[in-house]
Length: 159
Image (cartoon, rainbow, N blue to C red; front, side, top):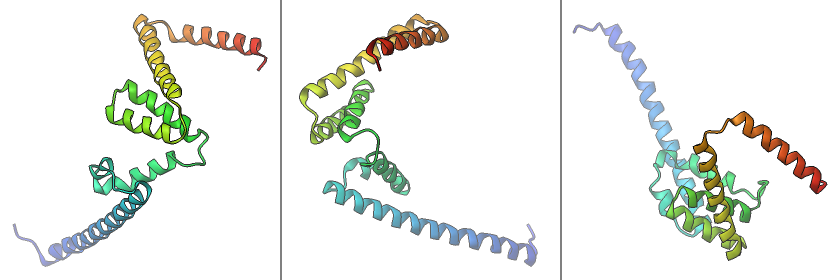
């Protein structure tokens, strides 16, 4: 191939900014990673392995989401949030998540009875989901029936 000096100069002008941008983004990702790692360590007293195995370039974003969902400003209190997550983890099933969310629920004041009940509610939801899905009932019919039942129950309770 025979490139003119103008073609080569044009390509160099395109490549250099791309390389510089890559270097800047890499430095920003590294700084964001190090900041996230520092916050995680300050929060848990160690850099937990679940974060260590996460891709470095994506950790800062994942940590930010993790923090936001654990914020004390959330509508769901930490104890109930952990009980919900425990019920879901039990149904996935994920032994790691079950362990973590059980420990976290207890740390936020959940009793053994609340933990057992949360898991049982998760199991009940799974059970009835299988029954309803497996029977292939019509969703519109199901929804109308549930709406009527909820209205009846609400009126009956006075709420």
